[in-house]
Image (tube, rainbow, N blue to C red; front, side, top):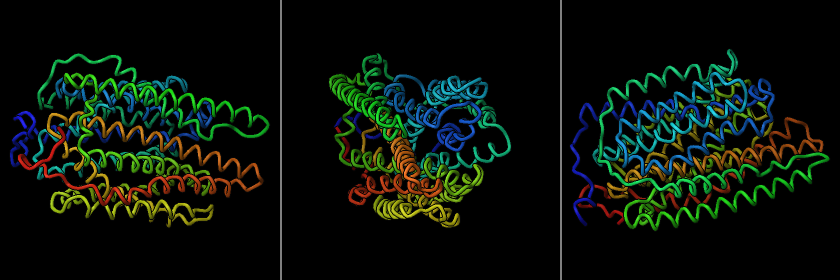
Length: 494
């Protein structure tokens, strides 16, 4: 192993400048990720105000996550090519511009464009945050720092529905963006002024073909998944179902072929260190297993926090703000426990957190398969809170163990991969669970079941899918370990 392959020498504590960049990046990540889930609660309002269908409205959330999935694979390269300050300015500049476009949007098409611009900025923030942390934070403090990241990545999307619900019950949907815009601009100004540059830059050219293949690959897969259950009902059901099935097959096939070509292209380019996403990170078995576990967790997490508010509003009959308040205690629990969980990881490692956290998540998902239209709200509050605790116990060790398993020169690629997996899996989770919920609920309604009972049947089916997909995590949770990532002790990928 050469000197460049080893982890850098870390100070025992962070300097004031390093602390400042960490907190600014955490704040930027929080405000950007918050927007991923604000649109879920707003869907009924947007359908009425903009005259759009439920399927079209869903794309305000799915397109946001899909755009991130397309952009994030490029960030591993970009973070090595450009300075920290330049990347932060680009991220928050795009996010602020997108927020302004969405705020002033005269209709659905412009609103969707604003969400895509927002997502382009958000896509840069999380890889920038995680790469910076791995670069400046000593290994023995990474758990508590990644605990803060898990707070952001879990708390922000969980609080999004609560904030949106309160706003929608008292103001119009435009205020969701009006409230966020000044915060985003303030973060942009502060970051451009105070964020120092960390790490070293390279001067390799970006590979345009890799960018195109990445977009077609991830975009095709997620779009294909979104077609599940969208065949329609009634007299035209057969024709609509046939069209949806054909679209699904074509999109997934195109996505799979493009993704395979993208992977092949990266293998070729990484021989001269010009890959857009260096796949040598997967030579670490611990990294690969952690990423796979995280992908399934993300599917369950984003799918659940999207389906649950719809169930609460359409089936239980709660208002937008009331449905948001149901998930608030869980969000607060995540925020309070994040740093504590990080310290536990630093001291005792992965399994003491990940195994019970996974058990908790699966137990709640299976419990959700018993929901009815008369399930008491207090039970939903308690179970959602417990679910949030299980997720918090899982995310921190997954982030830290995955990236800590890599050599320092691969941190940016590892961060980009983790963030890409989160967004693709999250978008797939939302698309699949909402599609299952909609199709099963509509089928029940068509057979004469009352609307509330039909909605409950759809929700149960969606949670059943999440529970079945997540059950194998019990095995991987026991296998993922804390890497010995102090210099001279690590068994990194080569």
